[in-house]
Image (cartoon, rainbow, N blue to C red; front, top):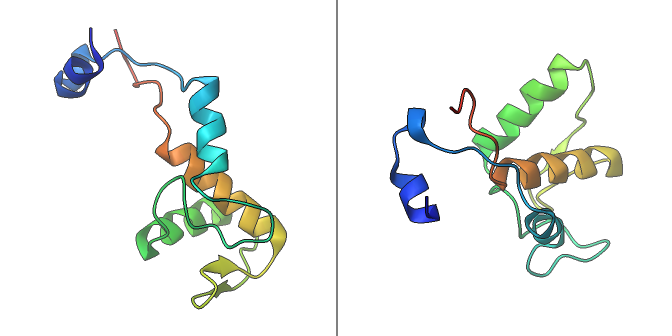
Length: 101
């Protein structure tokens, strides 16, 4: 089944897959990502809805998310910035389709 067919197939006929190593590396690298630069490329978009999902996930673990700086488009601690980057990267990668046959 081609990628185009897989994207158009009903969910019950979709073939799930894990992301490739190359896709994972590309998601982490982004288009122009380097140490110390605010995260701007790769992964899911930085949107209020995505931050709300991330905050809910963090609350589920009883982890404090600190303060989000709108100007920097980043959280105030390196730990949370890294977790949010991983959250967005993983969310943008292809995943195994639940209950795939």
